[in-house]
Image 1 (spheres, rainbow, N blue to C red):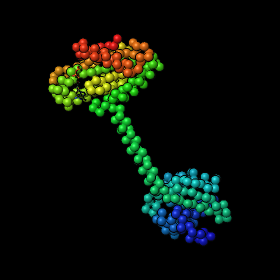
Image 2 (cartoon, rainbow, N blue to C red):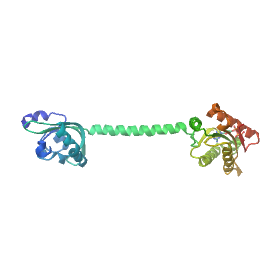
Image 3 (spheres, rainbow, N blue to C red):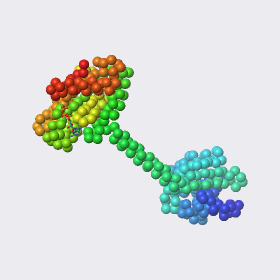
Image 4 (tube, rainbow, N blue to C red):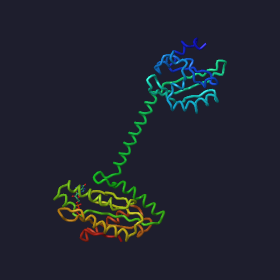
Length: 306
Ligand SMILES: Nc1nc2c(ncn2[C@@H]2O[C@H](COP(=O)(O)OP(=O)(O)OP(=O)(O)O)[C@@H](O)[C@H]2O)c(=O)[nH]1
């Protein structure tokens, strides 16, 4: 009977296999293989007949066969779209999608169709790879969009976004937030005498000082040019003032032509203001104004907004 159908099955675009009755052989011994199966496995039909189907599976697929596929087949009478790996003549893995049906008739055979899934696996891999590249690319783009290129600190846009987050958290917990604005004194002179590249180096070194000495929870950003801003959560006025004094000392260790670099600092604390003024723009504006007062007072100092 099987031999009668052989010419037709040889035309099929998938591997067609027939194994023995499951109650006698556990569905393992091959009784028939079509031309596509010979080609897919690289093993002649004569060599396939009589071999166990499980001999043609990878070790992992063998476990799948015994623990999932065969019990399902015996229980349901069929199984569909199971992914397995065959092992070809030279041991290479051949991914296939397998369907099987249990023939309940007198012959008691299992009919197997195995579709070559190599191309599908390749496409899956290409898709995964493309997705990974896209994720890495968009991560890079995001990083660029929130970072100041020269100093690596967050840029003005991100500074504002992070500050607003901190401020709304602080509103809920009723805790103070201080905003600091810091501007290098006479920076034009540094550029004019040392050159723009040396000026850039100073900006980077100053950014390093701020990054190293701020707390993890603080936001430190370059607002633009030679102006920086820090947002300090859980920090009241006297703590912010102490931090600003420390910054003057630390920044003074950066020397320009042997002289300490100086900055003017303005600061404001949310606790000193009405609740409806607890937005970053208002706080920044007040701190910025205080910073200009520090400049007017002779530079190299800190002014608290009042
Ligand atoms: N090297 C460098 N210089 C910058 C950058 N951004 C702004 N500057 C320079 O910073 C200087 C700012 O000069 P001013 O606004 O006159 O201020 P200042 O000389 O610091 O004087 P005061 O702020 O009043 O103490 C200008 O010379 C700008 O060109 C930058 O990215 N790199």
